[in-house]
Structures are given as C-alpha cells and as structure tokens.
Amino acid sequence: MEDFNKENKYLRAKERVEHLRKFYNNLTSYILVISFLAIINYWSNEWRYMWFLWAAFGWGIGVIFHAIGVFHLNPFFGPGWEERKIREFMEKDRQEGRWE
Figure 1 (cartoon, helix red, strand yellow):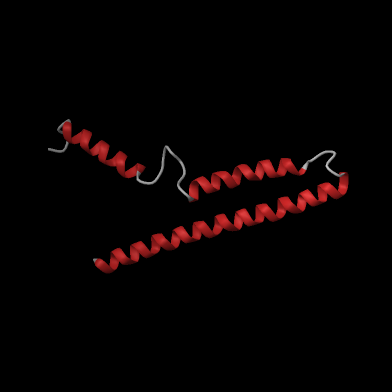
Figure 2 (cartoon, rainbow, N blue to C red):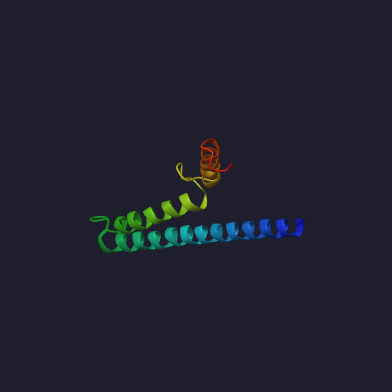
C-alpha cells in the first residue's frame, strides 16, 4: 500500500510539473510574440495606432486564466474545495439520518 501511495504522489507531482511547464511555455510565447508584434507595429506606423495591444489583450486574458488554473488562484474553487463540499454533504446526510 505504501508503494501505491508513493507512486500516486509521484504521478500527481509529475502532472503538476507538466501543467507548470505548459504555463511557462505559454507565457514565454506570449512575451516573445507580443514583443515582436510591438516592434512590427513601431516600424510600420511609429505608434500612431497601437494595434498590437489588441493581440496582447486577447492573449493576455488567456494567460491570466491559465495562471489561475495552474496556481490554484480561484477563490471559489481552490484546492480542497471538493474535499470540503464532500465532507459537508456527508455531514448533512449523517445529521438527517440517511447513513444510519
């Protein structure tokens, strides 16, 4: 049983590292591409119309939501939320006599 727990922890940690790697790849791509678009924007019209900000804004929203998911920053469904709700429902059922 101990080996199963170790393997389970290893797999969860490996999955977490994979999510982090994907987020950092996304963030790096965002910085590089938006910087490149800003340079093109400057060369083409010297900031008279900063069209690259539309791409930065749209992709930036995606990066923010990606970070919220990877770093568990969601205040409503953060880590442990499922566990707390399960315990809450089990306690409610126990008090109503459904488990006895």
